[in-house]
Image 1: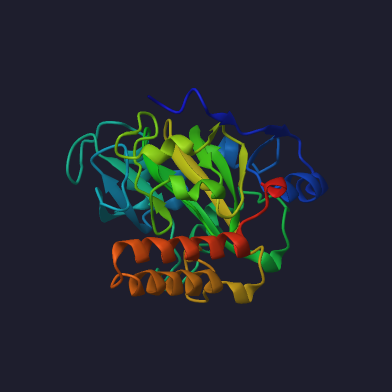
Image 2: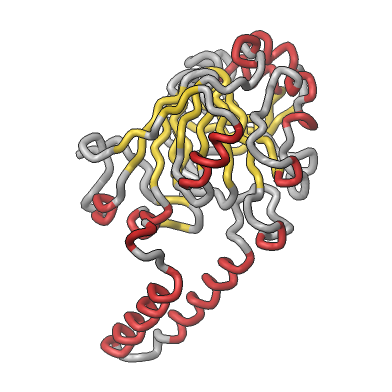
Length: 318
């Protein structure tokens, strides 16, 4: 059984102005495919040959995966380094003459800052020869900018289901992507480990192992070159590159800067208040372990009810 029978389509909206995005689309806090937005000449220029020539021999750290479904929880891939031009060359074909593990291995680049431990990814800083080809839509104030992440992936590669704590736009420059998204309110149905779902196969999910997944509602879209996907913070997304794919994500802070962890270089650490709350809950649950089963059950239900009363949105806001 797959999600085909219950999926919903992400709306596709053409020729979106800044005011329409901010006043209408952004306020709904739902994903949307923006088609016809000018993201610059990169859509025509960023062929494999052009990218390889402009990126040159800069060394980049990449994920190398023997299978199509990358699994962050179980780490079914390895980190390696390649020259950028060689990465583009390998990503643009399915069988490799030179390889790390096997001829049909797959590659994924998520660009990092100059200092991966402290630096923020910024296309203008890491790939200046390509940055002039890219026009980032003027959808947010410059002081809200957090990062711009350059992404390259082999055909058929799937990135694990996860959420980000900042709003972002995914600009699909080359190739096509299938994206499946889930609302933040489906979090309890996705079998989370941190910000990532343990469910790897969304095409043929194992409902015996993950029965609550049936309660989640998937949203689906296919991105073409030039499309821009708005992904609101906390929306889960699973991305498959249908062919050789090049894209850029732009993340921005939509909360006050004090809400975010100042040591977060990837934009995926929970807000400071949320992180503290989760730690408190974990300690609270652990403190109930010494009680008999019926007491643990009783007080666990009371904890859940307190959280529901104080934090859950009422039905008319869902």
